[in-house]
Length: 150
Image (cartoon, rainbow, N blue to C red; front, side):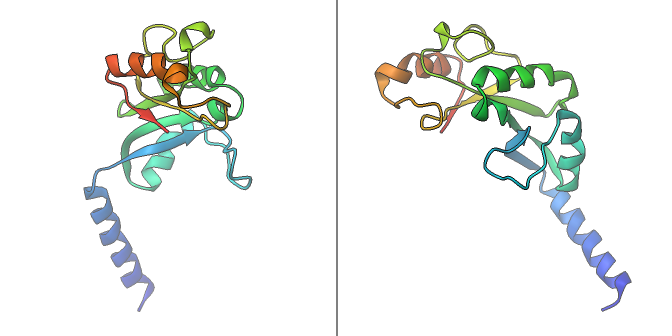
């Protein structure tokens, strides 16, 4: 097999992948918490990274919402809004009893126009998935047709 034939095969496979019109529901910005060798991804780097893997659109979250606080990660997503492509939407990190929390957090008001769901990390953020704990957030999410990701 020659270099030229390998390049032709690679180009054909790349074209087939691009026809799939991939939509990634697990895009993440920031420094990954659980992958020490991974490099932090910034909002302006998202489009080239998606292009490298032929991803056409997706749902993006920020690691700071898990590692530091939901408000910090959600605020970074709000600040990155202009750098995100039109076919990328955000998934915010939520906490139970959100209306009592300050800052950009689900249930503390109207959702951000780009928000399409809420991620919950009960173990990391130390809360139970009991109705009396997350019930109000679930009701808020359901009334806006926003899925919860656990």
